[in-house]
Length: 392
Image (tube, rainbow, N blue to C red; front, side, top):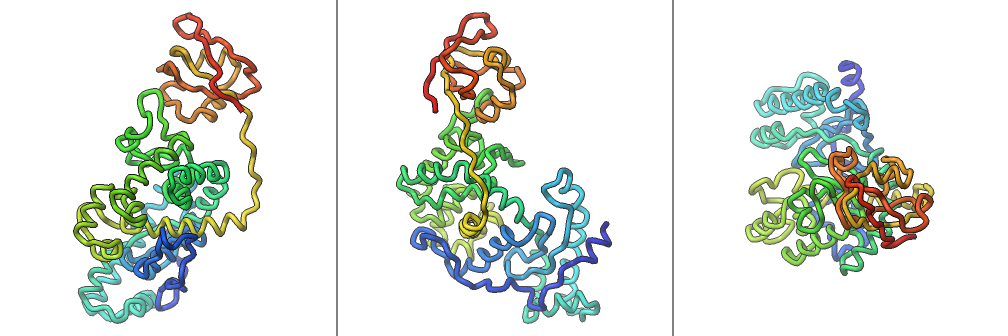
C-alpha cells in the first residue's frame, strides 16, 4: 500500500506554485470583506482545497508560503472510518521526506535524485537560513472537495433562515457561510477540543448565549446557535472594528485579537508579522478560509442541482414538568431517532434514559402523532400537561 501510494505522487511544475494564485477573488461585498493582496495566495490555496483536492488526496506544502506545494498524494478517503489511523504512517513518511530534502539543500548538498532536483528547482533563490525554515515548515493538508460539496447541499436546509437572522442583527448575510469552515453545515459536528454544532461553540463561549447543561445543549439547534453566532460576531466587530479581525477572533479569541491589533494595528500586518501567543497556522488562515469558502459555496450553489426537501409538519409542546423520553415514546408512539432528529438539543443522557427532559422544554413532535394538546405520564406517575406552544 505504501509503495503504491508513493508511486502515484502527482508531480508539479518545477515552480510548484498554485496557478493564478494572484487572481482576484470574488466576494460579494469587498467593503466588508476585503481581499488584501497579502492573502490572495492563501485564499487561492483554500479554494483548491475546497473544490479541487479530494478527501482521498493529501497536499504536502509549505505552511508559510501556500503557493509552494511539494506533492499531492493519494490516501485512504478521509471520510471513511479509521482513515486517519490508516493514513498516519504514510503522511508522516512524506512529511519527513521533504523535510530531509530541504535540510540537505540547506547544507549545500547537490541534489542527486529526480525528486531532489525538482524540489531544488522549486526553492531556487532561497538562502541556507530560508531553506532551514522551509524544512521546518512542511505541512500536510487533506483535500475537502467531497466534504465541502456535501456541506453546500446540507446548507440549503437552513441557509436562507440563517441569512435572515444575520440581517435582523444588521450584519452582512455573507457571515451565514462561516459554518462551511467550522462544521460543513453539520449541526451534530463535534471537535476534539469540545466545540460542537453548526457554529462550533465551545462550552464556555456557548454558555454566554445558549443553554448548555446535562440535559440540553442548544449548540446543536441550527437556528438558536445562529442567533448566538450573530450576537458573538457582532460583539467581536464592535470591539475590533473590522470583519477580517472579527472573523479571525472567532478562531483566536476576542481578547487575543485585541492584543494583536494593539501590537500591529492592521489586519494585514497581523497576518504577515504577528506571532504572539497561539496565533499559528489555523488562526492566520481563518479569514482566508472564510473568503475561500464564501466564494466556493456561491459558485457551487449555482452549479449543484439538488432538491430542497420541505420541512416536516411539526407541533411544539411545552413540558409542564419533568418527563422521561420513554414516556414521550410510549404516549405519542414515536421512536427515539425521530425525537432526536426534531430536537437536536436533547443531550444523550436524556436519550439514554439517565436524565429527564426539564420542565418548560419546547418539544417538537411530528404533527401526525399529536393533533391536539395531550398529557404524558412522567416517571412520578403524575399527569403532566403538554400545552401547544406553536405549530406549522
